[in-house]
Length: 141
Ligand SMILES: CC(C)(COP(=O)(O)OP(=O)(O)OC[C@H]1O[C@@H](n2cnc3c(N)ncnc32)[C@H](O)[C@@H]1OP(=O)(O)O)[C@@H](O)C(=O)NCCC(=O)NCCS
Image (tube, rainbow, N blue to C red; front, side, top):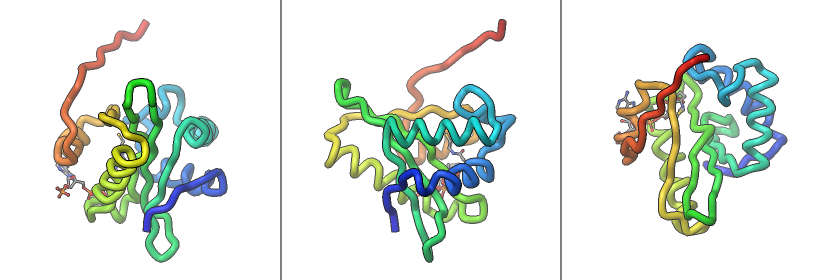
């Protein structure tokens, strides 16, 4: 079952993020991967957009978030994660299908975007129908 999450799920969202994201790889929210930074990031995401959770037997197994830009009919997908032991079993696909359906029908969006700093996810996102839109380059000063 997929249902919308609110601040009541904040700590579960923080726990899931910490389990799933490798802090070295992800540099969460562009700042720090401390628990507090993750908590603040999720709070911001809940205010700016919506997050849905995939539940089985009342256990939260995965999430997906969406921020809508009505002016450009664009949506940004974020907080896409599935508990480690349940990855690769189709839950991510179900969450992505759900968000796409919602974006099309309820928000009238024409395009979804997402960013990833994990090279390994590119194949997975291609499989989910995404194509690469840009290269981001950076130089530390
Ligand atoms: C990314 C993530 C949410 C996907 O969830 P998931 O439940 O594992 O995904 P699914 O099992 O539904 O797989 C989705 C599709 O990608 C495919 N896929 C999965 N891993 C793949 C890989 N390494 N290479 C190519 N395709 C892959 C699956 O076959 C499936 O396609 P199909 O439905 O046509 O068979 C999950 O793996 C995760 O939490 N990863 C760590 C956190 C993360 O990186 N989040 C994204 C941040 S940008």
